[in-house]
Amino acid sequence: IVLTQSPGTLSLSPGERATLSCRASRNVSSTYFAWYQQKPGQAPRLLIYGASNRAIGVSDRFGVSGSGSDFTLTISGLEPEDFAVYYCHQFGNSLRTFGQGTKIEI
Amino acid sequence: QVQLQESGPGLVKASQTLSLTCTVSGDSIRTGKYYWSWIRQPAGKELEWIGRIFGSGSANYNPSLRSRVTMSIDTSKNQFSLNLNSVTAADTAMYFCASGGWDLPLGSWGQGILVTVSS
Image (cartoon, rainbow over the protein chains, first blue to last red):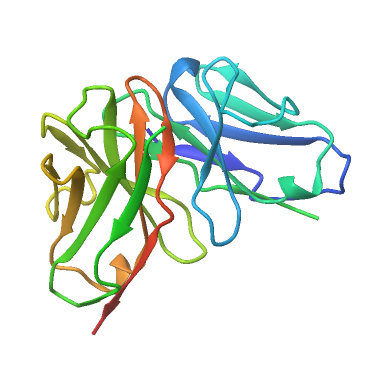
């Protein structure tokens, strides 16, 4: 399953809302869909998966929506620490894939 | 959550085999609660899923790498490993090991290890 993220880069200011999209080449159950955040020099960090299961310590400013082949990550009220690269990920079948990433920059 | 740490050579010659190990702490690798994965990331590029292995030893690999990849588990050392043969410069990347719970995404990640393939 190929995951295509858009846009490639989002230029926003602190306090604004970010909307990131991920389209799958075929349907994926939302139960098996996740989003990661990666900062320079760090491993990816699991943010949120499934219907809206946030990983430990993840702010409720992060939310997800979507089904089928179109999924969205929304970040309300960007904080300085949110400027990073975000990856979508499907783990619905034995062959897992990641999107190519969306960078949120100031 | 488990903790993971990658180890292995940071430099591999082209055409040779890249061998990395991930040491698991915080739980037993043989438990059926987790699957164990490798992911790589060339500098400035996206994440690429390499494959996963279970405590039983069964594994799934990325079709694009399947002919060159082998993963294994060493329960006595609580480690799992990655072997990638016939490497080229295109295999130069940061390699991460990670784990996830049954029917869950990869929630625990190692810090990563940079592997450079030299000619």
